[in-house]
Length: 199
Image (cartoon, rainbow, N blue to C red):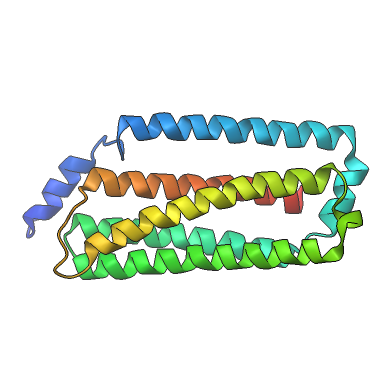
């Protein structure tokens, strides 16, 4: 027989059994956002089918190493958010704070890499950027980058609430909502990475 030594463990299990993270309003927003990006992915696929040679030419100019680095930084950031939320649930505020800072750091690296990639393409010249591939590339990744910046604001607010001696302004539901949003941003990028750099 296992003896429960920490009452928080059983409380945590009761709270997470069948629990949907975040709030209903957040999921409405996320499902709407996923629908919009689903339309983006469909537009990309349809235009690729219409002119595969142009899209292959554009893909050939993409740096897979930068795209992979961007993907790994967002995945690492999502992992740090999971760790941060776990610490927050256990009221380990200092560890949660450090994990949120790590998540923000990885997210900031993604922004820097994307800025480097944008500048690299823009410096090539307009003749290379002409065509549907780069038009959709800049629009879709630009909208995604905006989501990343919004997510970083949310992570920054969560981190501030985890600082030692800071008032705990945000409950678990809001922290979960921030985490779910950030994971959505991560998943959307994985799809974009596959479409733009690989497929």
